[in-house]
Image (cartoon, rainbow, N blue to C red; front, top):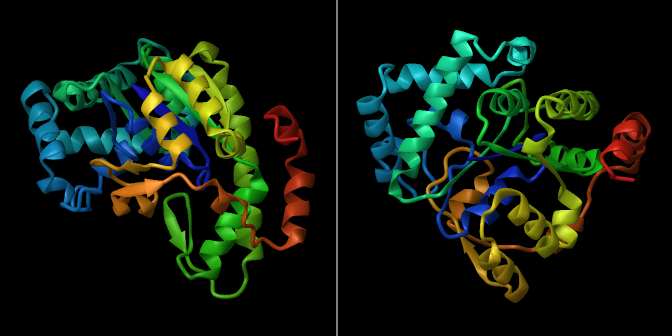
Length: 299
């Protein structure tokens, strides 16, 4: 299993789709949050409950687990919340609650892999889940995708401006005029998230690879090679698609960025360089996040 962690608007859905184009790899999208929206839509166009891929996984789980699927999915979803970070951090390896969660997670991954997939990609991005996986899933590789906070604020600003709003602690807000509090909240959320990641990284450093979004955009082939070496996934097809401008197909992913419903996409780095954020917010990001910008190589 490969887990992609990061802040919102950091490109986790994009990276998952790139990795999911490799042979023998299944990109689930945001696995845990998606399973709790079983009435939502899969990127194949079907409702998740009617998609053969996800219906087969659910049937497999119910046959092979003593816990019913809805209960297991709910428990896993709740365990990813940031309010569970400290309890996860201090949990001992023998903790029965976390061992049960690990069994649920392993069974879901096993059921998804039954179609001859060697790797399962989960881009749920939640830090608490990455901490849980680092402590209780020894075979999991975790990619932490970090993006410059000014670029994340730019993405938040555009969403606020077009009316789609911004999510915070799993609630969506749609302010009509005053954006400053939400942008400031996003900035400090970025800072707090990176601080918590450093605590998470200490649990099992060998399980983590840090990728900067800006590097992925500027030199995708090199960054995919780093990921290839780290995970063991053969990413030659993805690199060739990028070199020659070919499209990527999107499979049966759940939750995540809405672009996954397009079914295909071309990797276009030029779009990533168009910034609409007022300069005062760029200054605030550089000022308040400076220690972490330096720590994560953004400056």
